[in-house]
Length: 268
Image 1: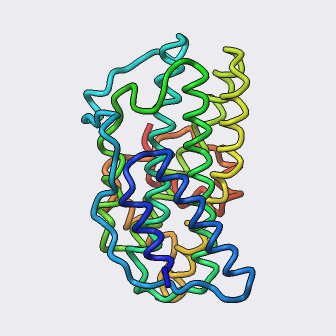
Image 2: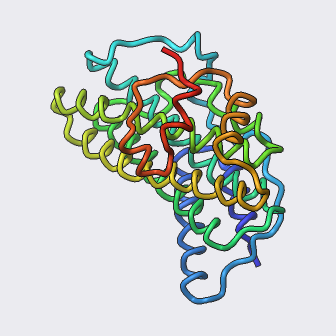
Image 3: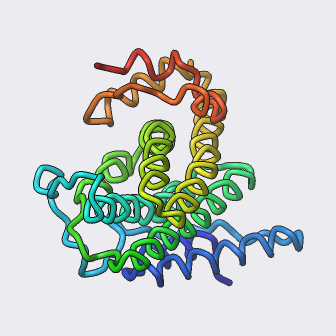
């Protein structure tokens, strides 16, 4: 019988983005169906790869070498959508990875419900971005992409609390800060499909940040740790930059991130 960890590794070892997300959707549906039937799948203990499989394109470059394009031009808007597609594909893998890599940590089934749902939604987000790119005459893989996207996962491969702090509570929270301006950019450019796709992403990413906050606080409670102090320590350990305002304080609060978590880590 296939386990949830087996499903996670199947996604992580599939290179093509459309195929990866199709498998992600299928596995999420199987998990939900088993839960609804009152017979949840075993979590299992499959071993995930250190790095997920990736297609031959896009070429992955050092962040300093990724060409900068002004978003006011059609080419710049395509580059922006391509960058978001790349982020979403990494997010699919991140959410399946957190299931398989830390399967030895005991959790209520709600933990797996949350991350399966997040992976399922990220799969939808990737495909929405691909659809937008194709509508504009491009495709995912047409441009180079950021090679450092997986670094946070590698750095926290042995530290679940570090993973929760850095990935959903820092990196995905950053998406809440920057997405409203992207939506306005595509609205001004009269690209309604991109506006609709980004609005979907914006609405659903709040939940992903909230899952990170919820399970981070759960583990702090289990270990009798102060959540704020622990968050600051882990972000300073694993996040190789600083948090940059302005912050979307309303959406961050909705996701369970109070200002005293992130403002002490901010610069600028």
